[in-house]
Length: 166
Length: 166
DNA sequence: TGTAATTTTCAGAAAATTTTGAAAGTAAAA
DNA sequence: TTTTACTTTCAAAATTTTCTGAAAATTACA
Image (cartoon, rainbow over all chains, first blue to last red; front, side):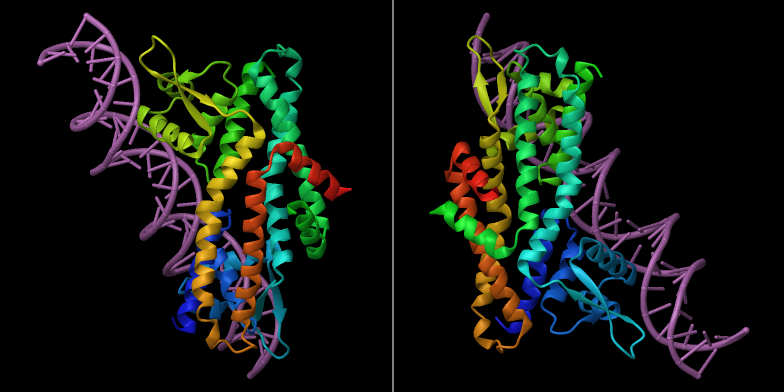
């Protein structure tokens, strides 16, 4: 395998992984492209390297910026904008966790709370009540664990996990 | 809000959460329905409660069984099959982790390994090589953390995290 | 064995998501 | 101010994913 082939493969795989992770394919591919770019790239360069339309490029670059995975960079003397990826893996993971927590966990917790307001009507034996209680317990735990992770730095995280594992 | 309304809401939310998690909407809704069902249900009952086709019901019940989230149960004297959800939250999470690890993490690690075979051709300065190395480190770490989690039991997990957090 | 109940399969339909392309918007330079 | 380079928007098209419905397969019972 040649180096360029490897890069291509990496971009494709990152795209696939992304789409499994609620990040759309193109968004993840742009991220991958910027991750391995030695220099920041312009929107036009991204468009051309990935063979996608300008509209698509623009929308997904915006989304990446929203997520905090890509930064806009202005080069002095250059009119157009350049883009640069966040390259610290721990930062990347944290930013993804923040987004997914907001998009997924928060709404679930909200619904669970609404449902709990009704729990008075529950028979002790009612399966529904038991399940909701369990899930609530679990979600709240997950919520606070993730909050801790988000605040933590990489070393701390690794250290904790190493302790946990041994 | 009435109890039935609450149940409905729960099924819908679990469906939405599912589709964010690589479990399709219907699959997650069936899981939710079975989670809060006091008794195991037949395929026909599932079909009717969720207003979906028999084909869809069958396919997603199979998928849930594959994932280990639902068990098939035969009632003596009854010809048809009944279905019952795994209700232990920790088991549920573990089973989802197992599937996603297989589907997402494993292929990524495979690609990274293939790519690494080419790394000889890398300049020390090449961004690509740095990034691949970082991601590999991270993925392998994630892989072994998840393996540990899968083997662990709920109490152990919680205990570790409580320690971690304080 | 034949019949009826139940389950499975899968091609095409429907729905959801992503992408394009062209037009509109902005702002630096001339 | 006009031109030019670039960015943004968004309706419609393309693609991908999910669902249906009907037919085929399986199984249990008579």
